[in-house]
Image (cartoon, rainbow, N blue to C red):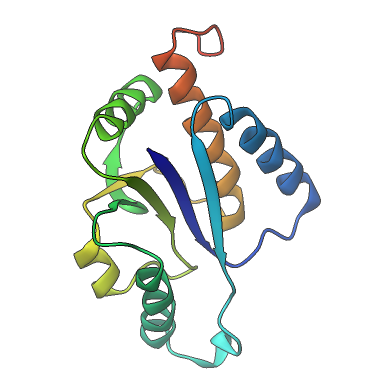
Length: 157
């Protein structure tokens, strides 16, 4: 199964890009991973939060197929330990879906249409992080989940 991460806007900080690239390289040993960067909406600051979420939502939905399993990374999502996340990942990998799609929305979250399309929501923390930092944190947790599933030494209980 392929794993896709859809994000809004590019990562600007070099130190975050370096970390992201490191974990993307590591993930190649476990899965077909791809990141789709949807460009930030031009003049998005002039739109209301709702209008911005709706525009971003249309672009997100355009890149999701009907057979995809979609998991939103959302502050109101379910919390998982790393081990429980690895179990969820394993369950999704065993499903009949062709692709598992994780989505990190824009600064104001997701449109109602994106929420309606999602199969589930997860939260990586009760704390708030920048959307650029969440990309690195998520890629590390995805890598950690695969090492847990393979019984490798990366994760310590």
